[in-house]
Image 1: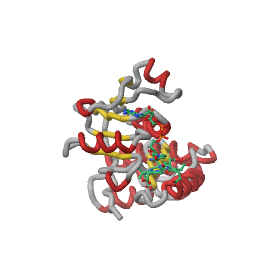
Image 2: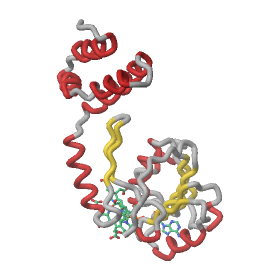
Image 3: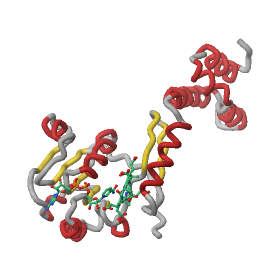
Length: 212
Ligand SMILES: C[C@@]1(CC(=O)O)c2cc3[nH]c(cc4nc(cc5[nH]c(cc(n2)[C@H]1CCC(=O)O)[C@@](C)(CC(=O)O)[C@@H]5CCC(=O)O)C(CC(=O)O)=C4CCC(=O)O)c(CCC(=O)O)c3CC(=O)O
Ligand SMILES: NC(=O)C1=CN([C@@H]2O[C@H](COP(=O)(O)OP(=O)(O)OC[C@H]3O[C@@H](n4cnc5c(N)ncnc54)[C@H](O)[C@@H]3O)[C@@H](O)[C@H]2O)C=CC1
């Protein structure tokens, strides 16, 4: 088994070349666009859901069969054709500094993509290291129920509150006590029930040490 190194990549404006324009390509494109990657698809055909994205210029589609020079500008490469021989050719053509994902052969991949739940800044990822992608998908669904939509607002609140705490207290015991206090479960419950004043009052008390 490969022990993959978990990492969240900033790939804004970096070029990601996907060879193949079918189902797997479609799945990967959504999260690549969210990450503002420059997505280039090399494929004689394009899945119908990707066509509007190509027409509006959100992705680039080169309507052709794969050639090694298609990889020239790629930081990441996804070999996602239904032809193992073509995926072999992509693997062969990739330079050592380019990171390759092969949709059909995990052992040959430099990276694999996890199942992902996004709640604003909170990103939960699940991987089975390729052992069972279906299990990764199932666990993702369980997590999506446990960490519901409220977490987006909650984590954004925590982000702002953390900035206020670090602006108020210098590094030291007071600051770390206040940062820990932000994990008080009531803050999540007040976010859920829309009791925003209670949430603010808690934060003010934390910052000033006074009751409101
Ligand atoms: C190694 C990896 C490479 C990579 O793609 O990065 C890979 C490889 C392969 N997947 C295959 C099959 C399936 N993949 C899924 C689903 C997902 N696969 C994903 C990732 C990964 N799949 C990487 C490992 C992730 C890990 O385990 O940690 C997910 C999590 C994310 C994503 O796609 O980006 C996404 C869930 C998306 C979501 O819901 O969020 C389903 C279930 C379904 O679609 O319902 C099936 C059918 C059931 C089954 O086979 O288990 C096959 C056999 C193909 C064949 O038989 O021809 C291979 C090839 C092989 O195993 O060698
Ligand atoms: N990683 C994952 O999550 C999964 C991986 N797979 C594997 O991924 C592979 C692709 O699956 P799908 O996307 O469902 O297939 P698909 O049939 O939907 O798409 C294949 C694409 O490859 C293109 N293609 C074929 N020859 C080409 C060439 N010479 N140059 C460029 N593009 C070419 C086709 O035109 C098509 O757009 C399969 O081998 C399958 O085993 C399948 C399901 C899930």
